[in-house]
Length: 631
Image 1 (cartoon, helix red, strand yellow):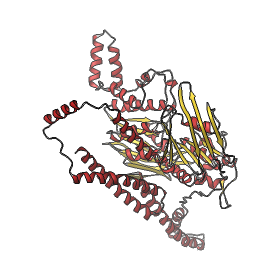
Image 2 (image 1 turned 120 degrees about the vertical axis):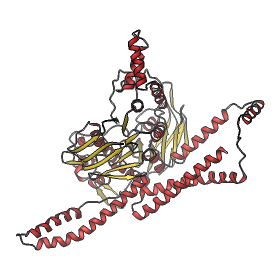
Image 3 (image 1 turned 180 degrees about the vertical axis):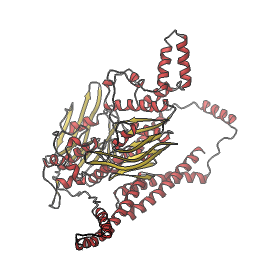
Image 4 (image 1 turned 90 degrees about the vertical axis):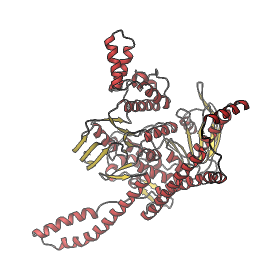
């Protein structure tokens, strides 16, 4: 069933063209991710589909039987409403039926009661209230009488998400769900729950996200917005990267051919007299078209990573017995840690556990209750916080960066200009001379990041740096950080980002406890899951022997075909699988890391083929492991 058909859609803001004459279709069951750098028009396109923005030209045809639902980054709510009241503001027939049913319980009007019961049947609303409470519970929202105005930003996001998911369940008509950065401000546990929910749900979805693990788990189609066009890719994020590389190689080949033809035609143009024949006029038109292709700018400047950083001394940063509480809530208890030169530390934990508090204490922005902090004399912090960028309303992007310095120093003694540095972080010449106030939210976030890096710190502290950053910028940032010679602390819920960058985890596990773990984020999560499982098994109350024998005997009697004993061959097969699966997972992670850094088409193709082979082998092992476990 076709949900949406779009033809020749164009949208501009002033002289900036976001997209031009794009065409696409959305069919039932499609799960689509949109990938583009900030300012390319992702959010604008979603608003056009919602009817909240008007295109300059083109047509948008939405099936009359389709309900379009948007989960936006900007959430509107009445701060005086309780969570329960906010959830019941849903504008749908099943919700209205549920409201009337609740009223009927207090009514003595028989006709009203009968009508309310009939509406509950018609709209299949009997299970709706349980569905709503189940979703709220999964998203860790338990106090339904709490006022919306008293909630944190993360809690508001989760309540809004619960409302949206309830709406999609409540409406039994066809629904197109549109989600703009749904994982922002959610902790890892919530992200993984949402990832599982959306991947299993029979829904039609258009998604904008920077979380590559989330994207791969949920979506099978990628739309790439670039250079005013829309490109389509079926498959994973790795497939999209491969296709993009092929397209760029083909484009460069076309430009090379056009350049050769352009030089010949330019010589002809200069030789011709002013009076032109009709035949030569046609050749002139071809010349101008060739010139346009030949002068296409496909420069993909790579970031110069050998920048001249201020020297780190022997002493970096040492924390001794740091404690911090807010009232009865203990965040840090006698925490000690000595940071090393070049160390890349990731900080993880649930929202409100004290991660940002620790960052503030390290920089002296917030007082500690007790303990000592010793910072090296040569340390220059660069702090990328969740707070917005401060700028003058009419200030241009290029001037904002030049306030720090006209040039950025490199280790080889050379420098690059402020404009070149901006271009490395995907600010084209037109955007550089635009007022900051005209930038999109994501572009402002990117400029804020640049502002920190351009000051040339030797100790970077990032608090949720990936929120609102686009995937192209994240790739640039990751490559920058991988080669950063200074020390680094990152607080982030982006699993892919953490796996690529950090080699050491400090995990806030509650009650002031911070665990020191050597390894990346996924390795920490795996270790924690195994420990939790072992702990759960250890605390399970053992049954008395007589009860065990009785239960076993009962099972033998009730079961017509009891499980057979695993053969020696099967036992060896299970041991082999359990040994090789972690090795294959490690190989897969390394291949994904190589793919994100590789630019040569032949190598990309080879790596993609290897990745596919390993992924298939892993899937076979996982299925066989489950079969053997059942035996």
